[in-house]
Length: 343
Image 1 (cartoon, rainbow, N blue to C red):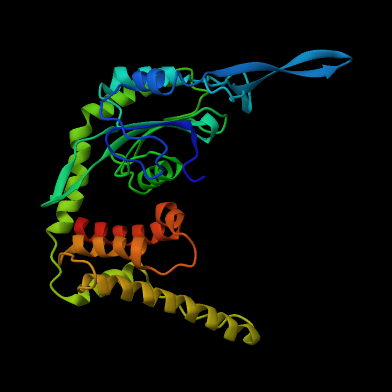
Image 2 (cartoon, one colour):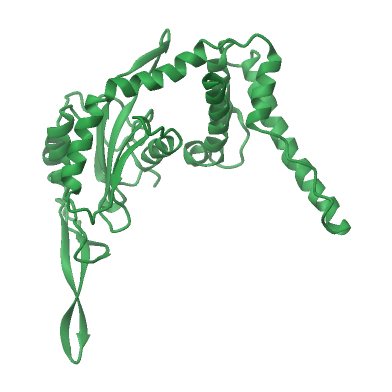
């Protein structure tokens, strides 16, 4: 299933979850309270020596198996997450929860375990702001930790609130595309071979809270500039969309004559699709089915409306909107808008 939540171990403060695995909680809780009271203590990460039969005897290889312990669920079993060397420093879920509480010093906004417990996330609210009247944008700080040998622990900010695998990926993808090195997007990450991983996580979590107001101001400034940049002529919108989705060039002359018609047909088809995208976004901006303001913020809203609700598709679009082609094309428009307000 797309939510990939372990045994319904997911917490959301007040906001209903689309997968309806559990009801939202009306009482604010710390991460430790959620882990102990609602997730029944969660689980532990165990390291067990790997052995090999050698000359008729079981001998340790020096490597270790990373094992997730049973949960309180009666049907739960231990699960093997992978193998590691002695350099691997596994964190425990309760340690992450404790560091969150002591460093962030805020109630958890959402929290959960994913993929049989391989991933853990905790989110918290950053300062929010109103872009225009009745249009408030919320920002979240997110701690994500992987308990297998492939993923480390990271801290990032996002406009998306994680409550499942899809929304966590959506939040992480937003962070990847909006990292500025000065408090927005990806803030910190480290692998589990770092002996000071837990300590460093605490330091960075405290730092991001102290710096939260500035981070919010950075994002607010971006949207304010969009609102304060009016569109005076429709030609401006067409220019923005052509910058974001430039047409493909004709096929090169340096190729066999026999292949040119096929190549030209492919390029013509791609350009036709781009025309449909540009026309679709423009029609929404020009007064289609949604009301948008005649400024750069209206261009952004028309873009997200088109890719999230209007662009035709033969398949479910959730993955594409979150981290696929639709998300990528939305970012192409955002990058053009950002260049304009930064010029």
